Amino acid sequence: MTYTLYAAPVSLFSGKARAYLRWKAVDFNEVAPSTDIMKTVLMPNIGWPVIPVLKTQDEAFIQDTADIIQHIETAEDGPSVYPAGPVQRVVAELLHTFADQWLTLPAMHYRWNYNEAWVLEQFGKLAAPDADRATQIDIGTKRGAMFKGMVPMLGVTPETIPAIEASYLGFLTDFSTHLDQHEFIFGGRPTLADFALYGPLYAHLYRDPASGEIMRNHAPNVARWVERLRYGDYGDGTLIQDDVIPETLLPLLARHNVEHLPVLSAINDLLAAFEGDDLPRALGMVPFTVEGIAGQTIARPFSLFRLQAALDAYGNLDDIQTATADSLLNATQGEALKTFSIAKRLTRENYKLALA
Ligand SMILES: N[C@@H](CCC(=O)N[C@@H](CS)C(=O)NCC(=O)O)C(=O)O
Image (cartoon, rainbow, N blue to C red):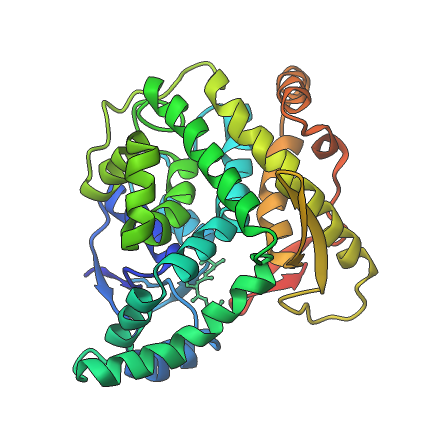
C-alpha cells in the first residue's frame, strides 16, 4: 500500500512535498488534479480546490505541506527532516517562512511576466489531459486566471518589478555563495529549509523555461542544488554539528528580516484588530519595501502561521541557545523577532487556517 500525492509539476507547493517524499524514500503515487479529480476527490474531501494533498494508506487526507511533512516524520522511519540543533531549527523555520510566503513574489512575477503562454498551456494539459491543444489553451487560460490575478495582489506591479528582480538576483547570489561551501542549507543532506526553498525555486524559477534560463545564467550553483534535490543526489548525509549556523546563511536571513518581517508585523496588527471567528484568507493590504521601492501586498494571516512555527522553536530554546539566537537576530536585522508575539494563536481546522 502506498500514499497518493495529488500534485502537479507546475505547482509550487507540490514541488516541495514531492521532493521531501522522494528524499524520505516514501512509497507514493502522484495523481494530477484533472477537473475530474478536483470534483470527485479534492473538493469533497478538502472542501476547496488546492494541491498538494496527501492521501494515506488509511484513506486520511492531509493538506498543507508542513502538515504532510510532519505526518510523514511521525509515521515513517529514516533520518529526520528537522535539523538537530535547536537554533538551527529556528533558522530552518524562518527560512521556511521566507520561502513559502515571500519568495512567492519573484516566483509569481517570473512565471506570469516571462512564461505566461507556456504556463497557460501547462494548466490546460493538467485540467484536460486528453483534449486537443486549442481546447487545452482555452481551459488553461480560464484555470490560470485566478493565479494570474494574484500577481498584482502580491505587490508585483510595474513600479515594484525592478526591485523584486534585483532582490531575487541578490538572493540567488547569496544562496550561491552558501552553496560554494555547503551542498545543502545545513551541510551534507537536505533538511526542512531545503525543501521549503525548493518550492519557489523549482516549479516557477527553474522549471518554467525563461526563469530556468535566468537561474542557470545567474546562479548555476543554485540550479545544480535544484537538480540534486530533483534527481536524488542527497550528499554524504553529514549535517553541520553542534548547532552551528554557517555564516553564509546570514545574508539570506537578513533579506527575510529586512523585506518580510515588517510585512509580518503589519499583518499581525490587522490580526490583532480582527473580530470574528472565521479567519478570511486575506485581512486587507499592507505596505512593503524592497530595494528602496514601496508597494502594497496582500495581508495573508497564513504567513503568520509559518512564522508561529519559528517563534515556537525560538520559545523552546534554553538561555544559552537564546543568547546564540539573539546574536544571530541582531546580526541580521531581526531584532523585532525577539519580542514578536502573534496577536492570536493560529491553527489548522478542516484544511483551513483558524484561530486556535
Ligand atoms: N500552505 C499550502 C499552500 C498550498 C497552495 O497554495 N497551493 C496552490 C498550488 S501551488 C494552490 O492550489 N492554490 C489554490 C488557492 O490558493 O486557491 C501548503 O503548503 O500546502
